[in-house]
Image (tube, rainbow, N blue to C red):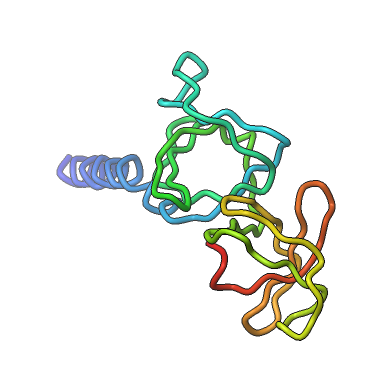
Amino acid sequence: MGNHRFIFYVLVVALFFIVNFSNAAYAGERLAVSVSIANIRSGPGTNYDTLWQVYKYYPIKVIKKSGSWILFVDFEGDKGWVKNTLVGKIPSVITIKEDCNIRSGPGTKYSIVFKTERGVAFKVIKEKGSWIYVQHADGDKGWIYKPLVW
């Protein structure tokens, strides 16, 4: 009888740790919006207010998961909830400076293809040294200097 009680207690303790610390595995995980527009909500459900909307490739850092919802923090430190079907493991960055140059190659000697403002998200295609080759949701591509993004 004592052996069964011991096994029972071990299982209860294991279940406690699984339930209470399963979010720890996701904390800090980096995801990105995988649809054209996603509503960011004040809580884990469509019955909660929409706080703001974000666009494709918008990067987020997971704080915790609750059912099919993810609590996250973004590049500005703002927190919100997003449905897990609207994000994925897409390598992405977002500009953190105003007037960022997107260049034709990985360095300042390359021509500027276009400029972008703060808060524009891009999918990461590849990296070379301090430079990242990125693609915007509209298809525009170019190289951006790493210190300009989060």
